Length: 72
Length: 465
Image (cartoon, rainbow over all chains, first blue to last red; front, side, top):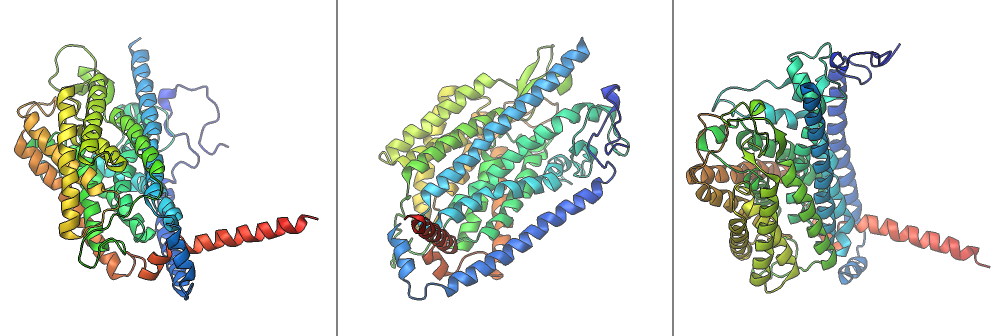
């Protein structure tokens, strides 16, 4: 049993192609990768929206903002 | 013996590109350093994160579809032929993974010759092009600091880095690209293919985004918003120069035989080539990179009256403006082009700022956009009549082909980016609210940091007896 089909290196390398595990599931792996990428943007947008809402609600007096501006 | 020589050449090429990739990564160290130096204190962390996260996002999307676009679209498609099949560049193909030299079961469309060529080189070619992609996206990043939402930039980074620039690379930077074939387009080190398109995209983003609060006085006169740390700006730009040197090397094929090129070159002398597989040398591009950098810095010093920010930025602009023809220019030509074009770009930056109220925080549109555009145009005149390619039947380099190509590059960056930014703006996802901009986009992070410092300080003081 081998996850990449290789049981021994006693082979001619010109006959060996892919050597990663679970060959044959490339399409599934690409789908999982695409879900990871798109999902990241969705989660990031939610996170940024929440952060902006919290910032908007903070420092109503403006004191901390003025202090930040003074620090350049 | 011949088999071992071929293997040695392949391994040398694999190592060569791997080194260029590592060198090019310094461009992004430079961009991060530079942008933090330019931004004001209350925006540091988000500025850094905005630029840094472009790296993984463009990487994964360039894996999924960017690499395939380069090989699939050299004909337009529909201009010089149809869509080209490129199984080795499809994300689900075994050659897009850890691979030895044979054909795996299920590698549809891959021949033994494909496998023999791509098994070692696919990852390093992909990596080199990926670093061009991340650079193209990152060029926009500095322009929009202190008011753009990070998420909006990351969507545009994917659009520009993994779709638009690689599409124009397929057209004008592929040995069989239709712009090279039909127009004689010549842009060996990517004045247009990387820089003009990124400048066009940056300008579109800036138009929709608007200027930073306080950039313009009520009467419309621009204010200078100086960098908070000019030392970081300087180090950043020098790191970008260093990475750019690696970029130049990555645009060459280091060693190839006339038989492998299969064009019109006669004899048996192996050669380095540019991206179009036309002969050049690493010596040529070393001469010309350094001379165009020098021209830009010297002109930048004079025109800005010794301002460090513009002196170093004009050095970069000097390289960009000579890049289109730096495989073929004489070093003195590279020097003079690298001096004259940045001077024009510097003037244009301030003209556009005053006339159109565009707030480009780092001058990226001038350095990359105008510099890249003019660099391509100049190359069309300078290299007029020279062969654009080693292949038979290709148009020769000419001013009209390069001018049309420069326009196409700028527009291809501008129009789709403008549309996407308009959509994001309509969804309220492009710019932070004015209150957040005044507080600084790091407001929440700074509060968390200060609270942690107070907490740990209080705990440590409590331990003192």
